[in-house]
Image (tube, rainbow, N blue to C red):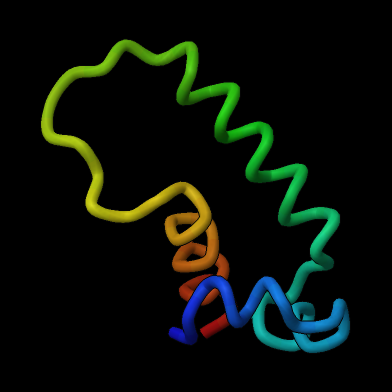
Length: 64
């Protein structure tokens, strides 16, 4: 998995080639996840991955 910053700096075609979705769709997914996380009660161990990394990991897994 490439560095998230490097991946987000790519043009839309490169981003779509790696993830299967457009950058705009990724940002919509990220906003939805951030809203969901804000409503959730914090319990248990915190995640080692950021929300961006979690979404990219899921997309990578689904494309494989």
